[in-house]
Amino acid sequence: MLNKLKSALFGSAKPVLTELAISEQKLDHQGLPHDVPPRHQEAINAALTWLCAAQDNSASADGGVARDYSLIKGWATSYPETTGYIIPTFIDLAKRTGNETLHERARRMLDWCVKIQFPEGGFQGGKIDATPKVPVTFNTGQILLGLAAGARQYDDPSYLQAMHKAAAWLRDDLDADGCWRKHPTPFAAPGEKAYETHVAWGLFEAERVAPGHGYGEAGLRQVDWALTKLTANGWFASNCLTNPKAPLTHTIGYVLRGVIEGYLLSRRPDFLAAARKTADGLLPAIQADGRLPGRLDASWQGAVNYVCLTGSVQIAHCLFLLYRETGKQTYLEAGCKLTAYVRRTVRLDGPSDQKGGIKGSFPVDGGYGQWEYLNWAAKFFIDAHLLEMDIQGEGHA
Image (cartoon, rainbow, N blue to C red):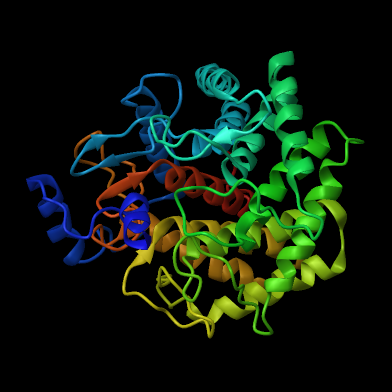
């Protein structure tokens, strides 16, 4: 069962490689494409262009964003979960640039999310054509981020209604101790997940849009539960899709962001202290050139020889948020190292299906998102770089 899950999530261990995959593998094993990182703005623009292509080229052609571009299979079908949290990124960029086309794209994503919502308020896991089609806590929380952003930005009651349905479903589905257990994803190993603080963040955004419904309180209870998984050195147990003994930096980024967002909503000092404990614990794992192993064990030692690029930019974003709250220069410096490393992996020329995309792993044959360019990697890449630019006063996109 676990091997099947790993194959579904991260790719088959022995796929039949195309010439394109073999070529990219050889290039990656020669080293990073850039000796000097591309400029922030250039990299953001390239990643945005790629994300627009992912929406336009989705194999299901429904307004959602293709999960990935695979060097073996081509463009995938749309992925509800990540389309949901790509929406706030497109709204942010539309507001920064005045580009109405980005608003139109965000609304196509929103309309699609509203259309596929289950009557009770939840959303399915996996790609749109995945089975079984059942409501899943985590995916619902990620789409809630987009619904809340849409309800805040656009005068469309359907977005607000869908936001309330999703938020109420999550609020009422929470167990008494603050853990979500009733509607797990069928596409990850069974068990409790500390990283569902990233679901709680969706409730925090709903609380900001429509206070007084208990959304924020429910999310804070979940963060309290997640902190029972926090160890003395800042590492979280029960915090991975498949291997809780060596969680992905992707899920470490999820749990850390949720704790930080809990602090930003509540201003509870214990949440900030917990987030700083995790950040301080992982800082030594970041190498001088910004390389961060894609899985980290309970002593914060690298457990794999590839980089999970998604996790690197997620953690960078968290470090920038902590710098903004604390003024600790070490957080800013470490975040900049992480983003610079990931920028060095981005190709700014070549085939349009790859140009500006962010791989699951570097090298591309690593164990996360193997052979794929992932839509959520591009989303988190853009978000982290926008915040970095804001902090450093480099202007807007």
